Length: 347
Image (cartoon, rainbow, N blue to C red; front, side, top):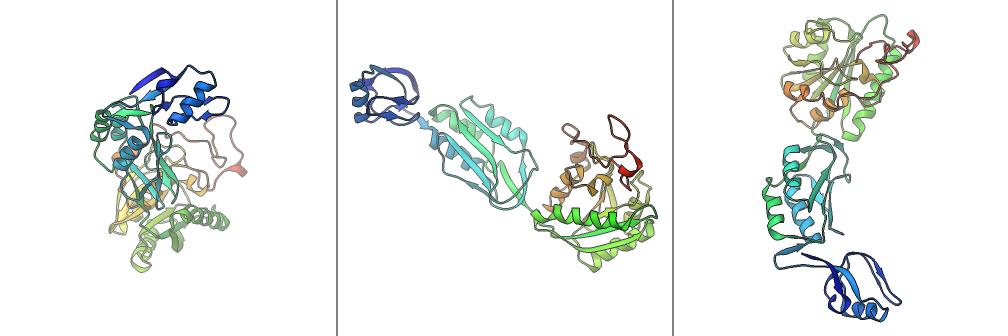
């Protein structure tokens, strides 16, 4: 692509690099200069104009953006019509954005003329939400650059994994120090978390804080009520793999994949399963509606995405979230009063 000042008499058919106004003509930035407009500019006294001209093999900005966006779009994504060198991708269903950052980096590394911006990996999205944008910086790119950008990553580098697990069972353990009102509020908060995903609580069970009780409740929720994901809220935070909740999962014939995560709030989260059904031992911060590590794991599992130990330990960078008021011992500042403490304190 040629770019720079050209005589107005030679500008017809080129692209106006900037907005230009004459006595009886206005050219918008990026518009094609037709012969009448060029003549009007000359009559207005302009002798030259900054313009761009495509050369053989060049691809215009809109066509290039659309081609790359179409290449990147995977399942459950819609590509909008391009404009001013930009092409946006939108979710067609609620779910979790799936992408490999290295593949997006590879596209952006091809040439400064080609850019792709996305929402964060595993970001929960709703239908109609914009998840990515492709922007071509100049008015055109050489066809070879566009071809390299497309070849730098396999097609479908972006996709939305729809929520598939719809039936959520909830087990709450009891201790004398835990108020029933706290459990009630916890259930309301969880229901609000689930609402955008289309999932719902199908069974809520309250049991003593003992491993045998947890095991029995877990079997009832999965085998009796058909829950395809179970969340266990302990009256006391999980302190060890031999504690009540992990012991109850194992006593029910399940297993614990990982205890703990480098996300704060959310450190004391547990991930396990029983018979292929994911089980989350919720940290105390999951009682709060504010975003915490529980949200990150919950949405992935609802979208039927595997959550491994390696996935969890990779969350440390960016895992320091905002303080929550329910924390009895804030990381900084004065200690909270007993009235402020959550009945099941936990990161």
